Image: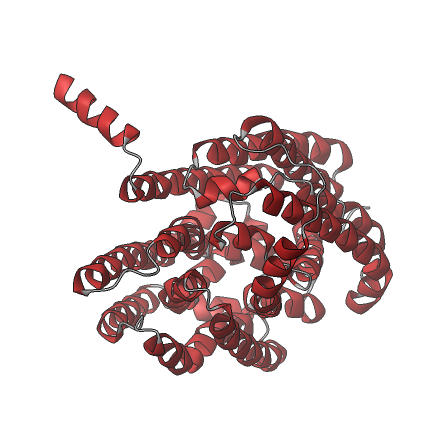
Length: 467
């Protein structure tokens, strides 16, 4: 036991990049896993208090606000992590000022677009919900830059606490509000509480500078030049990550959209985990070793990517095998279609996991332009497939589009990364075969999933959404 305790102290006190990366990975797993667990708990409680239409309405609100956020990304947080001046107070206060301005602009834009959005989706209630929900952008803009600094230095312990504590408190707020209002307002209030607590705790708990409004012309232009490609890529990222729900909202009922959103939340947990690990661990590591060359460096990077990607692909397959059983165990009958959706969506997003590490590699090299190129092309292809597929096949069209888009854009990814010596065709082939064989087995076992999604299982006589 003394030997074990000594070794544990050595690991925890080791400040090397390797040790911080290992701790960062563990804390990212803890943060994401805890957050997903809390979301699941709140989901299970709220689905017993609210109708499926409430979750469909909230999905529309979230998609619209996310779209506005992605259409106004300045790349501030990524700039702090990537830039050599990321610890300079002048640079950080300039970044904070830009961040606040963006948050206020986003809120004003949300208010201005509330009525047109309500008309587009033929949901009058959106005109009232969006201005309130959009205030979260102001709260997010006030968040301390120490969040990005902690990410840059792979000091993720307090960030994990802030995330989990904020979500836990918001669950209590949502449940109380759901009991009182029996409406989608409960979900809106919960999202505002989460964002407000994150911002407050970022200033109270994280080490670093105390942000003050400031302006430095050179710092602004560094953020702008790095962020201009991030801005374009973020628009494409919105279409890739939320385009399905944005388009579905126009062609399916609120109940179907709400059930789809639950299936999507459960099925894409490994994809979101891979994104978190890539952004919070791989990007800082790649940034600090951007000049490293040689066979040993490439071998280590290949091993890290193989382990991360392989683990997330295995998790997706597991969810595909147990999806329908899990949903039937946990959810009320009105939500059981989410089980079949979970099976198919878990398989559909496996190709996305394959290419995530390439994006962070390009960003770490300061090559946001190339990352933007293939992200934009992927977004265009996927959006076209979604528009055609959803109108022809409904929910099934939304499932098929993402993996097809990744397969079609992969040759471009390979070409762009090959130019920088980052392409790994043998590893990609092995992971792809694993995906293909696993998906075939899952569809053979869950042979009714496709039929159930095509047929649908939403009661057209479901109660109307309460106001």
